Length: 125
Image 1 (cartoon, rainbow, N blue to C red):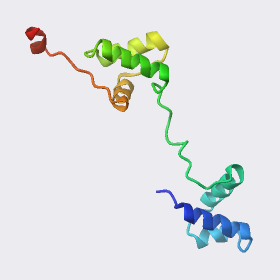
Image 2: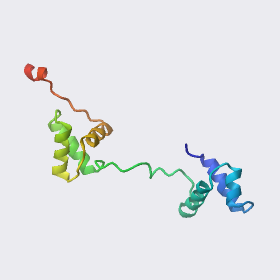
Image 3: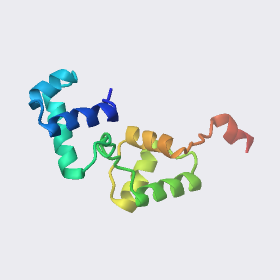
Image 4: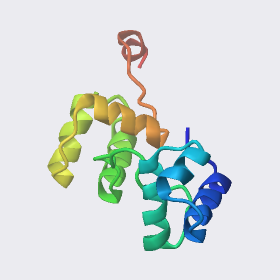
């Protein structure tokens, strides 16, 4: 769990006032010394102590506009395409290589659903 913005501000302000060493401030506020040092560095470099949301996990391989557009076209053109077929189409059109599980997660992220034809549905047509 992340520390509150208020706690970060108070701890950094205590160091800035020079009343205590960094180690003492870390102990007073019950935070690790490394966390306090990171907050001080963040304050120096960015001027803010806001939570950094830009570092949350790896960037999705298929999150490019070109790949997303191609996935949408492929699903619209062939809603019963297998994950393997979708991966191959995206690879052919965009040179982005994706696994079946990666494609499945991307479809869920994009809110797309594939409709599989069953043998019974094909017989009805």
